[in-house]
Length: 52
Image (cartoon, rainbow, N blue to C red):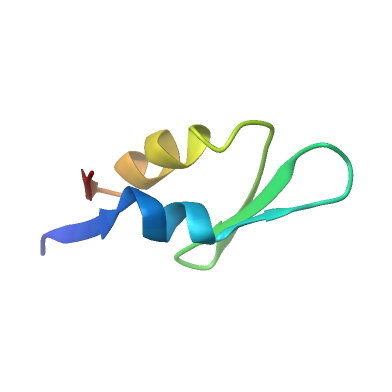
């Protein structure tokens, strides 16, 4: 199965956590990140092709 997502859609799922970082949820897994650019790497590790 091919999974695609736009970078903007992924960024919309990065919610500020009030501690200077973000909480990002993808496929039922929660990630704490410090930079929104990290969502690309996480999505790619889940097999997503990112569309810019």
